[in-house]
View (tube, rainbow, N blue to C red):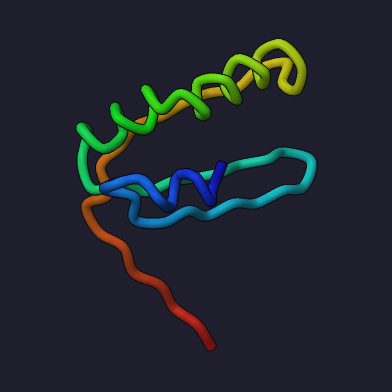
Length: 73
């Protein structure tokens, strides 16, 4: 899905972490881009498969990033 998402207009990037809990965060230009991604046919099929086969539960959160900075040694 990341490869497909990266081809969508408005896609800015993705970050993912997998341990006992899996988290994937995708970044989009605006709400219209998010809506187009949600309406993508292949993505819709994957979401349905996720609900029926892969996940017991999941959460979607849409939030605006106001600031982003980091520190590395």
